[in-house]
Image (cartoon, rainbow, N blue to C red; front, side, top):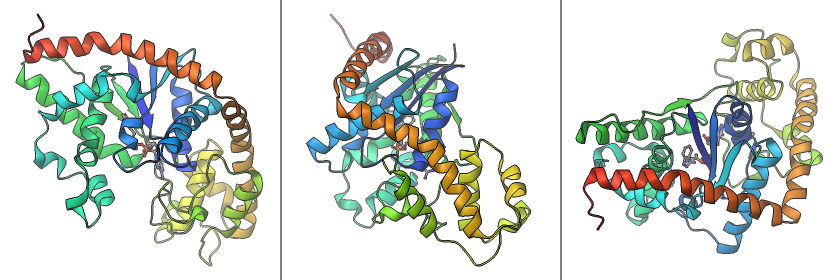
Length: 332
Ligand code: TYM
């Protein structure tokens, strides 16, 4: 059986990049795979979090999953800290991850910034915890945005190192699934920077909680260049903002980049942006509305998370026990 594991951090607002790069694909994949979608609160605390805000954001991410179309009857939904395998397996796998591998991780370098001495061990070990998330369920496929590719390669390397040490094909090597026209959604203010929760400017991203007016305003003010839209992919060279907005248009319309370019060739940005607003609002408004309903009374969400945690624990506990036996831990 092919099994999917993926997750999102409950930090700040979910945005269009999270939706188009990951969540939207998850919804489709539920029908072909056994699926596990986690809210990775252990990962969230690798940077400082306010406790009340972390609780709120955890429920909000669960609400976003469900509002976007993840069906709790089909997919496991739970928050990572409620299932003890994650942290325990991360410790064991950390003993198979040489510093040389971890030192190559670009996300750590970005997040730690210049002040690396003050970055936490947790931030450094972030990708090892990710490997535990995936391998702890023997997941075979991992749908993510482009920015997580390097972390998935590390998870494969760690799985390989474990398998080699004990001379068995224990962990399957998980395959990244990075697809669609928006695997890397860029900032609306700067087409060379990733759309991100941590960008200081709220105008740089469309949040899943934004209403129609906010979406229209952000798209209207999005950075562009003075030329009409091109008629071929080659015409996007050196035009990161045009490239980004067309990619968003394509993904929202469920079409290829090629078709999105053909449909909009020669248009001025002003006209194109009006169409883009219409598509964005048509796709996002129902999700935002459902998220509001779900977060207004957390009883339903809390129940889904509790049931998900129970199942995820039952699923992962035998694997953890087996890994401990393989490693040689005595269990009298
Ligand atoms: P997070 O919360 O940073 O991102 C969640 C998902 O959103 C994707 N994403 C984007 N896709 C396209 N354009 C963007 N601008 C953009 N920004 C974010 C990310 O690629 C991701 O798929 N470390 C993971 C969470 C995680 C995880 C895992 C994922 C923890 N354990 C195990 C897979 C498997 C992360 O990036 O979260």
